[in-house]
Image (cartoon, rainbow, N blue to C red):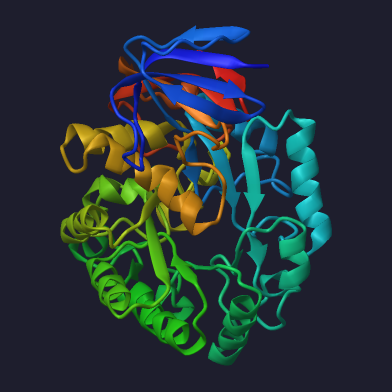
Length: 425
């Protein structure tokens, strides 16, 4: 079916198009973009007067809890939440149950997404090692052939540096991206809060910055040794940003992201043991938050993710150190991003690039583009809509938000995947 979108303000992350225009979608692609004076004909028309049109968001880190943890979430609930909030592509880390270390699990994820209507694209990230146990390498070639877009061991430590080097050599040999969340398991220990005055006052086990930076230093050296194209995910420290900046200046094949909640929250927001603000890596200091924002502006941090981690209610009712870490982030990703524009941290097209074009380019995915011939994965956003964050209104099965009661602007009115409208307000 052909679809014409009229009178929308074009938000092009690549900067090729601006102003108001019309888009014609045919056969799952953007077939033409023209001014509002240019006439197109289509079987269906959407008048987007006063709204923005942009590529659908590409979330490079989102746990859907499927397979293995239906009490927390599943592909059906989380893809519905994604398209309701403008996310058309979800990249799933390999720490499902069972892990994504074999072709059968990859096929199961694809099958379940198709069974529920394939509202959003779901791309598995394969395990670097079998069972995520950090000892034996997975069959990356087979996993890649079956649809894994990158390889990671998530938060599971590798047995030693030699195993990691061999894994990165293997990935480099087959041209695959390695995704690393730098965490030293010994320094992380049983910590649950940033090492500083707040953790001391509350008596919480602390996580030093070195838990991230020591691992990151080692990982950067292995990138230099192996040449493996590597993406560092969910950075939280000012020193990490500086290390990535210097590594990029040396020409290493490195990219990086941070979870969007790290740009707004600090360890002070833990308050009196608010477990909805328990994350790994932890919420850091205001200086760290400011450095992450600076890294986003200067391009050191290439993209943003939701780091979506839905939990059942009981998982967050335990005492702070015993609660499960993570924030349900799909329902607030776009709202938080648009706040950064309101705060004049980045212009709208540059901010959109951090959520669309950049992650799609890093992960070698077809989305994230607003140009003729690109996949028709698009969203229409009403910039004048205002809404209050209420967990009980989330589409995601996970209600564990750190932003209850926050006031947001901008709301998705239509989400289009493969040229088909999969969500309409």
